[in-house]
Amino acid sequence: MTGRLFVIGTGPGNPAQTTPEASAAIAEAGHFFGYGPYLDRLSLRQDQQRHASDNREELARARAALDMAAGGAAVAVVSGGDPGVFAMAAAVCEAIEAGPARYRSIDLTVVPGVTAMLAVAARAGAPLGHDFCAISLSDNLKPWTLVERRLAAAAEAGFVIALYNPISRARPWQLGRAFELLRAHLPAHVPVIFGRAAGRADETITVMPLGEADPAKADMATCIIVGSAETRLIERPGRPALVYAPRSAETVAERAGTE
Image (cartoon, rainbow, N blue to C red; front, side, top):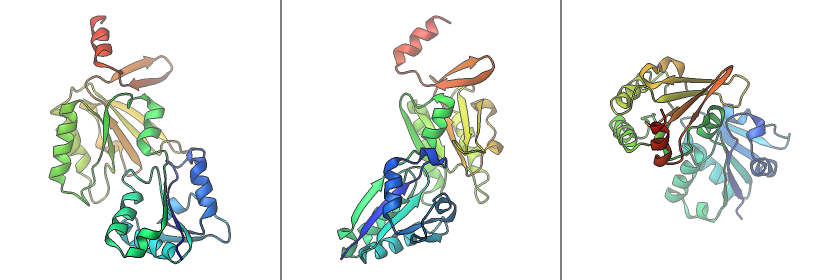
């Protein structure tokens, strides 16, 4: 007998940004595996059980959830944001691939959520309105040299770049190094959006040019969006400026001709 396994993204932290599909999966599951602060966002019934673990124990968490689901339980693995964006869906798939045959018989549902870069982008305007990419600055699962190569390639290709996991106590220098590298490929006026706790009560959204971008503005609750050379900034008297990506190169050329 096998049960069900939901891999759920609860969104960036505001309960209003948890999707109805995720809420339905939360109501159906009986056991919840996840990083403690993410589980704290859930309002669980008395018959639903939490299984909290450290944020660095993703594979062990995935295996524990799969074992319980393989035994017939309805289980949820909980991530913030979207579970497929630097979160638990990949760890669950990795555990299934490397694990026993019984894992492959589990009824698996990955439930999408609003990821941090979408919440930050919505607060700032439309910085992801054209081609973009997302890069994690964490070097826990890849070498820092690879992070640098990807940053340089994305900047040279003209992508807007969303930066996840920008800084931590163990990695206090990497965001500053990333900004240095990006300044070698992008104009100093390119807007950089620091979005901390987007959608939550303690939200802060700060926009500054790349030439002045300060790593001290970020922590692990921050998602950063670095514009491309084409990214536009619209000043609005008495209101926050809007940051947006023009939809085509033609739009940029036409705009440049009127200035």
